[in-house]
Length: 80
Image (cartoon, rainbow, N blue to C red; front, side, top):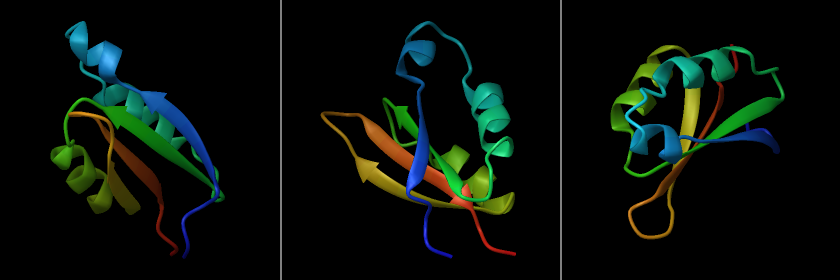
């Protein structure tokens, strides 16, 4: 399956700066994705544990380096 062209954006940098754990909100958003949708997550560091966890749940991902220390990770469902 190719990645979808429609990605919803979720920037977690502000949550992390405030000391809020963003994982529950990310999980809620990825589980609500339609088959043709994806989620892009902006983070202040490479969220390797998130990528690994969602890969185990059937999500593919693509990681891109952003500006400075920022990262952008795209998630979408793998085809069954």
